Image (cartoon, rainbow, N blue to C red; front, side, top):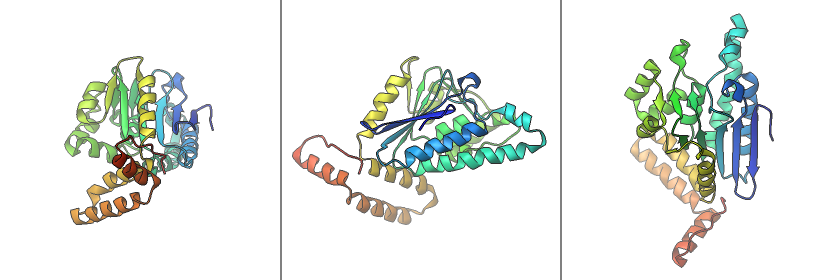
Length: 264
């Protein structure tokens, strides 16, 4: 599936799905139509069992500059209705990406601000060009972060740093974001797409179902007591032993050869 606002493709040979925001003329700012296109694209790739990694990217010179502020102004007294419409579309997309077994890789060129920053924070792996910039930005509108920004940011950098970034709205360089644990890897300008493809294909060759369990365990750990979490790890490990990938991993280990995982 593809749309003029959010393109999507699935490489059936590798299992790599790519979702790309396609509004470069406004730095991929997200309006209601784009939010709905994003939800539809996410539903398509997360519903396809052949997908083993999901890549998020933006067309042009930015990942995403946040919400389309012009659409807020145009709404007049019905700004709340516009916000509800946006989040009714984005919330299911965010939760579907977190629930998917396939890891999510964000490729960031230029600005990731506001909602764009929140979507980056929700990714499992973030690769950024050295000139990329990250900022919360909601303080400039007198608004509050959405799209999971406060949930993900606190888990990435801790409460004190997260609150400081929300209060000041200061711009983080790619290197600063990497040092804070937001960005996984920084690459030179012009190398983003190639490195993103290389990394996505490497992840796609891994044990996808096990990766999905990694995501759930890490996300749920802060809400559990240790004893409860130990039992959750037990349940996840036992479930993993029932997969073809586990059987292949054990066989490959004993045969002293690299495993060939199929994602099932």
